[in-house]
Image 1 (cartoon, helix red, strand yellow):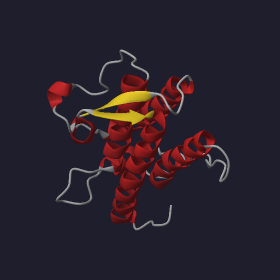
Image 2 (cartoon, one colour):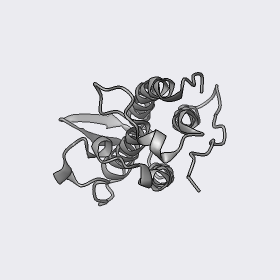
Image 3 (spheres, rainbow, N blue to C red):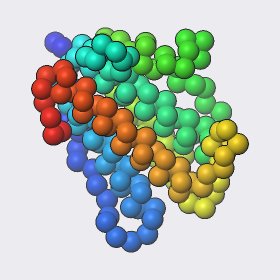
Amino acid sequence: MTWTAPTPSPAGGPMTGDDRPILEGYLNWQRSTLLNICAGLTGEQLAQRPIPSSNLSLLGLIRHLAKVERIWFRQRAAGQPVPPLYDPALGKDADFNEAAADEAEADVARLREEWRQADAAAGGLGFEDTLDAGGGDTFSVRMMYVHLIGEYARHNGHADLLREALDGVTGR
């Protein structure tokens, strides 16, 4: 039986109130949106690169965002000594270039696990706490959430175009 990406549960959060629940809810909505765009596709479809000039695939985006979650939440914010998700010797684009259809189910599960670990890592941090964001920049935890929301929004736009190029589906 061929594995097919499942439809995620809807995510949301408050529209008023304190920053933290709003930003956590909106990040969860962006996370869910990525998986909703991928829902109903097989591993083979997720791994396809439908735009010849690009190395982007939906599976590559799933893998990339798992890496991003690990770097920002676990390594940078919480200072956890976890290794890189993908072998640095394979280059900075290994998340995209090494995406394989037969690993799609495991890659989606890994992304979901990184979400769980990221949420746990951030749970003990205050929004005013700071972290080294790389390149000499210092971010507050609040700004890290804003950055991650922007990262997902950008890549969800890519994912929309990739899905449409694959099978014509839009508006997911």
